[in-house]
Amino acid sequence: VSENETTSLVTFWVGDKEYAFDVRDVVEVAADVGVAKVPGAPDRFEGVVAWRGQTIPVLRLASFLKAREHTPDVKRRLLVLARLGAFAVPVDRLGRVLHASEVAPVDYVARAGQRDPIVSLVRSEGGIIRVLDPARLISSRESETPRNREGVG
Amino acid sequence: VLVGRGGRRLLLLVDGVEGQREIVVRTLGELLPRIPGVSGSTELADGRTVLILDPMALFRVQSAVAGAELNA
Image 1 (cartoon, helix red, strand yellow):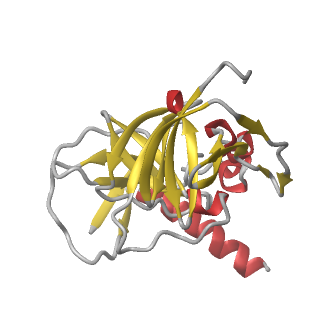
Image 2: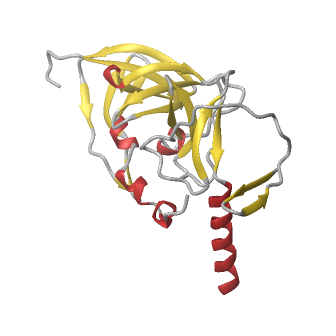
Image 3: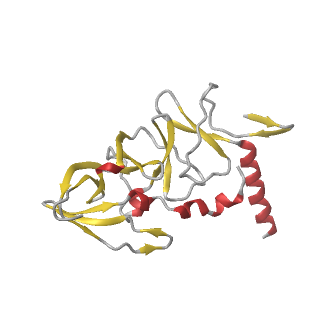
């Protein structure tokens, strides 16, 4: 991003840290009416929810971010993202829409089969905001799990 | 709950039966890998999503697990 360009971000909180997605990646902010658990699914999937006439997976965002799991007394929201197909991530609370002109990219670090989803950092009056790339939350390695190779179902 | 397909019958132990209804079966999408024993999902009138199970596939998975444990 050059000095004259601005990036519009939707910020949100998971635990005590503020994160963001590019506003173009966020399709909808939905209420959490209940995620259906899917037994046998990889750990990174919390379950599935119905959304606009289809069923979409819900990713366990906190595990990607090494953050604490959502506490039940917090009324969380689901951010529906569209990148390689629609999926949702639960967040503790929404932040704001931020127009950032200085976005500092970060080199990702491969971590045991999954890429770090944080692609850049933005400084704001509230501190550092970590910008996530939805594509890095969806890994092609997911389709290579042993369960999937069993061919039973 | 007694289920059957192709001459095979299975008894499933469940906590309760809510009823019988016609539903629209949806896939779990392309992002989620295929889960043995889960054939799809549907949305109830109150917005909840429920999984649709394939009992025969569940039986095959459990039989394979039990066989592996016996051979171990």
